Length: 135
Image (cartoon, rainbow, N blue to C red; front, side, top):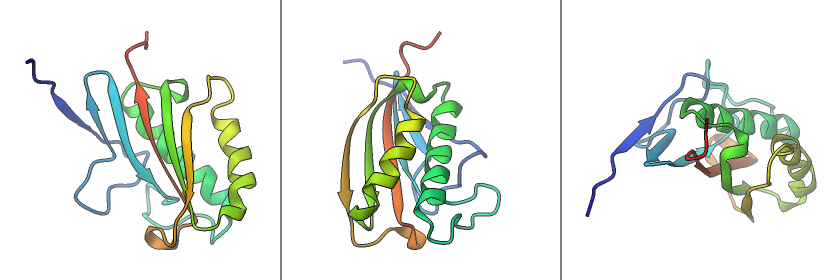
């Protein structure tokens, strides 16, 4: 059985991990991205002051920056998971999410309400991307 190389992906355009994990891991053509919260990559400070729209925009900006660091784009994302501390924010987050993935086949996804997120965030999103069809 052939062993696949596991390559960590890192970019300065997304926040540095705050624990023992990578921003993403690339295995063959599959990119597994860690969850992103609304941290400013340059300062490490939370963006938005609790405003769900600002947080969601920053989360998606961070996430797509990681995908791009691996050579992909939003159209390569095939699966996401959205974590919300308040499911009442779903409609707002969904509208911003739809803008991010509007030019592609929308990824499969799950959305769940959680009791708490790191740094007091209101939203976290992770993803899996297929990079095998990039030209």
